Image 1 (cartoon, rainbow, N blue to C red):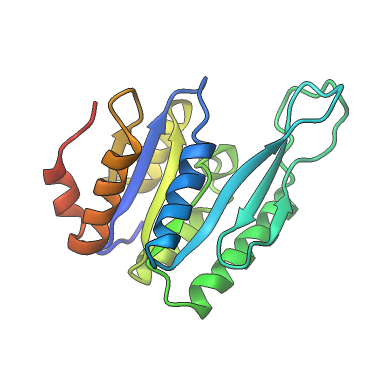
Image 2 (cartoon, helix red, strand yellow):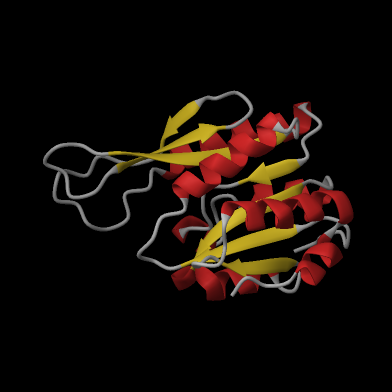
Amino acid sequence: MASSDQTPLIALLYSDDCSVDAEIAALAAHFGAAKYRVAGFVQHARNRPGYSRCDMILEELTTRTKFEISQDRGPQARGCRLNEDALLEAMQCAKKAIEDHDVDLLILNKFGKAECEGRGFRPLITDALERGIAVLVPVPLKNQEAWREFAGDFAIDIEVGEQVTFSWLHGVVMRSLCQGPAAVQQYGSAS
């Protein structure tokens, strides 16, 4: 993966039993309110009565377009239900946003199974970095090895835990936007 020394790629590593959707949505709203131009996605879960798993909906941050990325495989489905066609459509919407707008920060909902297998948002991450756009992406710990293979030494990994507060994370992202990745390294680790 190519990256600029000045373009931050920040991974939020989180345990498989927690969700970071609300925190990512709060960060996206905060940076948008602070007049940063933000593109990418926040994820919303929609519960359906009688179904064992919730539906995943991605909301693109520039257009507010919503993409249902879950396949309906029946109420008892347990395995991956990702609709890769819908994910590709969502990615094209975000790609257009970073092409058409002077974006400061790309926020993604997750480095998930599709990305681990070489698909999904990988091209979008690379495109953003090549354009000098900072990238923030949550990475489940179970996907950490695939993330490391993809990101190499370009990423700054932050493990989400009790000590990672919204204000701390805001400070890390602000420093990366203003001063580049070296400032984030100096800001320290929360774990």
